[in-house]
Length: 314
Length: 314
Image (cartoon, rainbow over all chains, first blue to last red; front, side, top):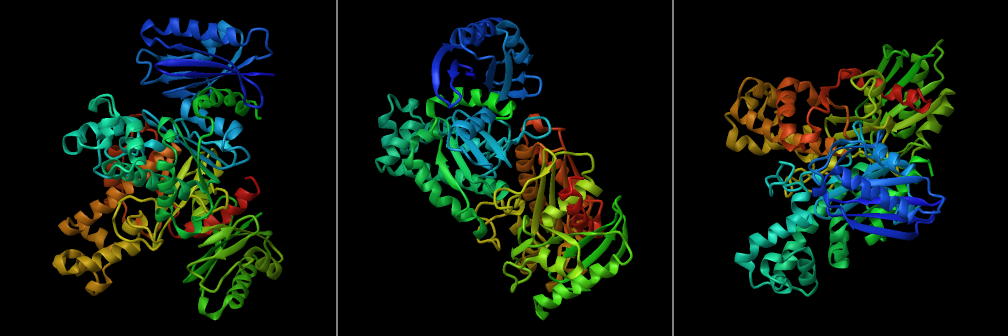
């Protein structure tokens, strides 16, 4: 049997045919074109699913979607990425059009499932996963099971307060991890800091200073730019406090860092690994690993495909 | 069948015979006398167990113990309350002396189990419990199961950082919840503040200013003392940030507050209930309750007895 994984994003969607070992055999990526309306997206998504699975034994589809998901019924309750989607029965609609059985999961939950089945979480029962991207998503496996909470909205790891009275977050609270360590937060910091630190390499690496982003920040930090290192250290410190908290709470084998920002690599991960122990009780030292996601560009599709593995019980 | 619950503390231990409905039928409390050595404590504990269960059908014992517990083997790895205990096979030692089957659990985990089986958590699958006492303990039930993590040391809810660069915690980190909202932290704050706020009612309620503690603080706050209210608000704010974090992470039905400090009642709980939403994403509003533990003095024995219920699967 092969698996179909759908990474449904606000800008693009990707549909992949995945082997049971987690190899992507075929892949279709399209612009989502949310502005064309729900029906159009559902139609094109269904066509892509049928196309990648033509003449294949692939009766199941897993969809990782941003937003608040009713995972039992496969409904997107609402999503910041799809403003006109309210209680869309994604599983049913796609099922009707493709004749396949469809499972839907929040994209951050799909991410940790992907790591559990195909990535850095293989063989582990206690996994904390963070996706550092436009926002910060979290997924947790504890005692082998996905943690979702009463309404399926738990594991919001990006919205713990790490800087009381810190920057305002989209969620309305000040100093959330997302307000400091997401790509959006980094762009905002860089914009605000231009006046004072305009001489920094960060702004020279960008096409124009206004376009300076996380990639430029970490590139400049790698080259030893002082402003970049200072901002990197603030981000590392916020992440370290949050991650130490997750380690105290979940006592995990592994903390996996994914999302666009994780591509910064060692310039982010090395100081992070050094800083986390400063916030840990001694009994937790040496109990965990902090690893980058090995799935990179494929994390979305593999995460979505692994929803099937999870729901079918392996 | 009746249950035997043992609340093993550094100062006293209590052994109770508990009905299946969670009523304490008999109870023996003794000074622990840790200084007499391990053998003496084990002997007297075993005698008390045999005494409360004489002529009763009560073949199982649950022990809630502070410290790091190997819950599978029933071993106290180490405990700040029992400095000379290293890898003590509590289950085996007590089992040998009493002929009963013994289960051991960390006391904060026992607390949340007690709430699940006999207290404010009855009927819920997602419970976060905090004991505010000398230290701050945490216990979590998620998807109906006790969260313990890989080594059984998870759910350390008292050691999340809520005030970066805040007061030093016993665990070696600055600004942990325990360093701000535990009875120990409150006594330290009161000692440090005497010079500046010596006129406060807090110090007048205490026998001597040096003896001012959490009870005096909350009593004075209830009477409208400004310094007491200021300190209460700092404690409430720290708790609110931490609890909002747990709500984001666990999406629980109920957050239960126990331990000596919870006896402050509404002067603590009311502002806490008001403050938590300030740190929550809108989708979590109205999804949870914050309740005081109804078990009060019996929480230790009932929690310990409920370990048996949990291990036997109900």
